Image (tube, rainbow, N blue to C red; front, side):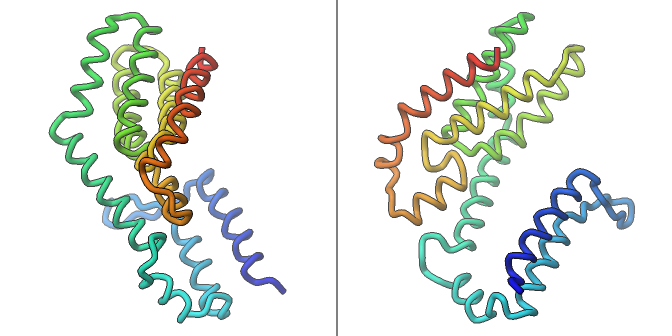
Length: 208
């Protein structure tokens, strides 16, 4: 019996269902999601059945390789902290409000401006952080302006995922794979700038 494969498939299905059902627990009035418990249980099963030897896990977590998961997590949290700081000092809000002032009340102009702002920020930060930062802003703005937020949310998601390809730092996955393949920053950028620009323009046109 292939325990790792069965465990992986079961955990994947249960996590998918938990995202749909959204099971939660309440601790002193604090609402906590429980989907992460499924992944934790899967990891414990793999360790308990010796499907993944403990020695192997420890060696991977303490290795000096560029794809050490601890290093990736530290890098991601560092980027998150930087983006949170920029958000707290009003950097993201300033750029968003500037774009909104330039477009006035025209929704098409607002749509293009939002796409442009998200694209630029994604290139120099991270798509995950941009989505986390701009999604509440879009919902808040749409509610007050009494407009449908869905087109703007779709534009945000498409722009952030498309333009995150242009530089290694645009997506943690880029960093992981480029490091594993030994691709440096400039080599990656020189190959990805043109394809990303083309994909970004095409995706914007398809949004209309």
